[in-house]
Image 1 (cartoon, helix red, strand yellow):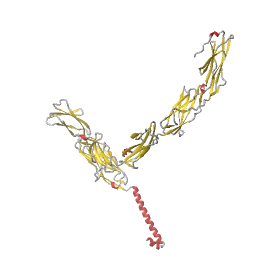
Image 2: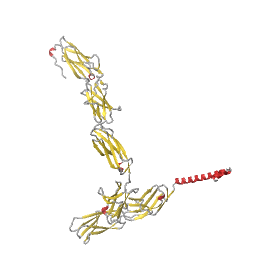
Image 3: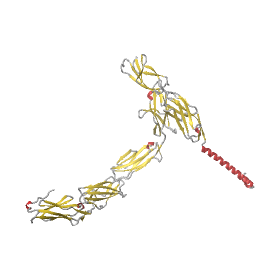
Image 4: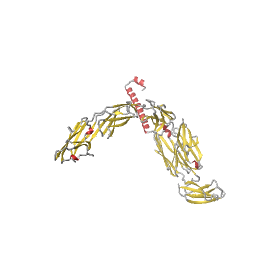
Length: 615
């Protein structure tokens, strides 16, 4: 703070400042009027002489004005007074190197200056496109900061959106409101709040600014040219269209489950076409976009299944090398289809045969995953994969038997040294002079044990370089003591269910269970499982299901056990019996009533009636 210099030459006596007083005509002033501050100093002097007084006016401890005078009073006027001029005022007087301050004086300016300055900037027309923004500027030209500006957006449905902005240095503020899809006619207003140390005042709302919203394009329409009842193999044509207000560069697309099926730019329609499959079931969405504006519509497509997924049934899933492997492919309901059987890998598979069945003498390299494909009217469906494992030679043995293992080198000049290992344990070493193979024997003592054998071969040319062949040897126990039963046993009501249970007492897993009806070639049930029993339920039996049933079980020991025959009778259901009994009772009751009626008429001698009725 800087003070004016005081002329010390005027100091010709002693003074004391008794009092400094600050006054105003009124401590409450209407906005737009004036504040007139008067500062009066009372000084005592030792002699009569002229003296300079320095008057300093403060508002909220900030210097507003200073002046020097020989008079004992001075005035400071603020005109026009605004709400921001409200505050705590005081006056400080300096004279002859002495200083004294007045008491604090609170002055309040009531009301705000009338204003109507909420307006659009850079806005030549009273309309906006959806997705654009409206820029608003609200100002109070005559007021002083700080301010809090409140901007209000009112939509056609009377829903409002507000934005607040604080301004500490300027008397205006600007904000942006996006124009959204649902907007049609928008109204904007602004209100300002002026703050001071003695309180705050809120202005009257500005006049409304109206903006008309223009749709760049209509809500999209999604239609299907497909038949009303779509079945696999039918043509699906889904079309999405919109109407453009002008030739905008819109983007229009069709999607399903977040996957974009087709799209275009700059056009008002897009089409997605495909041959229907059950995978086309679901909800389709059309979306039109332009900048920040997007509109969507949806529709649901239901595709009826043309035929069920094919089923691939193997004769065995685990078998020895050089044994017969058969694969059958069929569809529930037995529709006519073009079948093909494929082996994997690779991913797309190797076509083995264009037929519903396939039979080979299995080799180790036939191990793999097999599927069957069925085609009807251009629709191709694939079965679940079936894993087939073909084991090398000498794996089918029972407990306590000796394994005969052959190790053979495809190339090499005798003599050849063959060494057999079980795991890391050396079993035997054989040198052959006339053959390219050696035979080893290893006695198995543990049922179902899994053993890994490794054979190494070398001759005088290979020295330390050895080739090896690994094979897994599984000791297999054949299935024994098969039994077959049902619940309920013997008789089943028409329309009822029956549970068949097939059990073996022993046998190496997995076990293949098959259930047949006597004199029918096609099995009713087949499953290869890692258990010694299987339960299968046949539902809704009819008279045609009556007959004899049996079960077969087998495993990789290539021994098939067949169960006893089980006779199943289908009898009338309880409700059917009750209906027949009720019918018989009704017939008897009618006949009895007829006889009784005739007898009554005869008693009365009604001969005419007797002739007519035949009683």
